[in-house]
Image 1: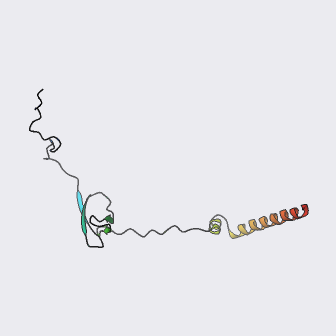
Image 2: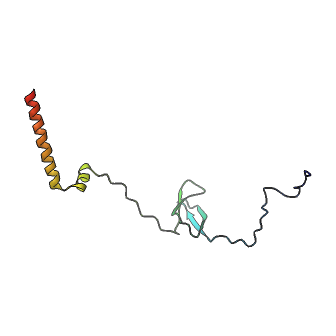
Image 3: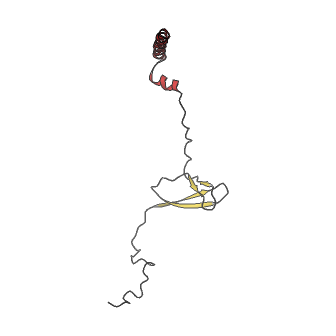
Length: 117
């Protein structure tokens, strides 16, 4: 085989596939605007979930769009106290009874320790 068998073909720069008869998936353009006024237009699939925010292409700011609603504000994790966690599992009457038993046991142990010393 001669070394010039591929002459005239630009390998890697041009596709050998035909583009006729190809139907592309439906797409939508979404416009994002950052606080500094820069606009960016992104192309998404018609079935894709559109994000409300996007990184601006020209600055480090976060751009937003009016095409979708802003997500609801997520309330941060509320720290529960030990008492709140106990009240989820037991009633106040049960907790009072357990406390009384624990105090009685503690008094009994202290009295025994005082007699031993």
